[in-house]
Length: 292
Image (cartoon, rainbow, N blue to C red):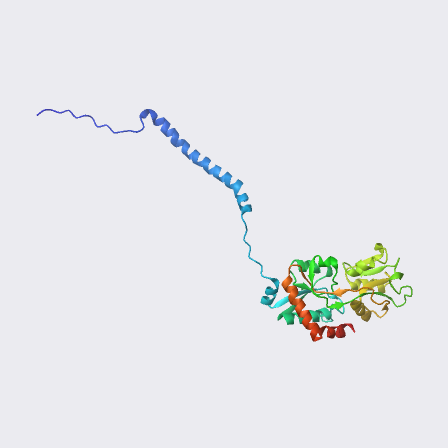
């Protein structure tokens, strides 16, 4: 037999010994490359995510029309300032009473809901309407051009012209032409305040938070007269026998129910209710009950 010589067995090493240090170095820097990539992604996220969120349209639910919500809730929330008898005031048991209170209840009944009243100071009354705290305002509010720019109004339900109130002992004031140089008390933010400035200097128009304070000022001799709507003037005289009305109404002041300007459906429904009550004779009934 021929003797054969076997060759030594060689194992293939893809990385020669002379390259081993470079391989180990590459393995050592891989974690740092990964960490750098992660940091870069994080920085990009912080930079661009807010812009993405700001440019993303937020879907908000469509609000339920106010008139539908009122019907669904079973009540209409009415704001009023109960310092204005006989239109709205508190009785001895702190119950709301007056022309506007009866009117609000009847309108609610016509709509098929109940009336929930909130007694709010005059200065905050319209803000409460704007913020949705109340659905409407029924509070002897005179309809005028300035207010109509901000709110919707129902049809007028009462004409209550302005009159002058003085002490019975006063003999110098009988009409608006006698008011130059005289102090006139009014409630702040009312059409009475606007009107008073036409007949005396502005610094002599004394504005009070409510008519109770204005009346006290007249009784105590701090002012010469009060400008008031005829409806309120009658209530003032009932509680203050030393005072008198010295003039016929010198303005036409029509009262309306105040509604937010975008509530056209509610305005329509309230006008329908008022028209129905007018035809039924209910407004005449309120006139007789509270103003005669």
